[in-house]
Length: 265
Image (tube, rainbow, N blue to C red; front, side):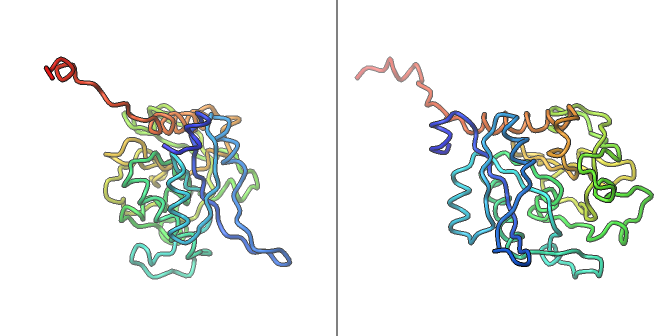
């Protein structure tokens, strides 16, 4: 458990950021404030983690009690053994490297993880899975998986999130159908080792995964951080995640075995 959490009693959650370069401005790291607001509202303390070199990245990782992998650009297909297709979007080697490391470390340490959109894809690749580099080109459907973005309303619910019962996701938000937004052109294809699919959209595209053995590693393809104010299921997802992080961050007290206390000296 981190020193900060011991002092504050609030679980500290690392939120991945990304490099951004704009003409006329100094290079910077960015992240949508929606992630921070959703975590804070659910009772956690968000801490931005920049895609740094391994040593400082590890230092930041050690401080946090849970990890949120954010949305964003495409994952380089080299990480899952494929050549890029023409429809592949912008990739960022620094971000890929950092987030794949963070995902692997968190799973090795059984830290709770919430992986959102690109984050779910990073999680799947970290487990050895593959992605559709571009859904319209490789898995065409009548459903527009980028409709919320196309209409310029980030929280706009455009399709169903069909959640499997008896899953961690179902325990957090309820099984059955939930209305979700959609901001992606990539998606999970072959499922990574240890992961299982816990939700799909109407056309069968993977909308959520979770780790079968670890305590709480959940990925969703939609953007609940843009929906929690209007949609109870999205708010419950962040609340469940923060509760799991808080539980996992508690120190384990040593147990006194009664028979030993009565042993003659």
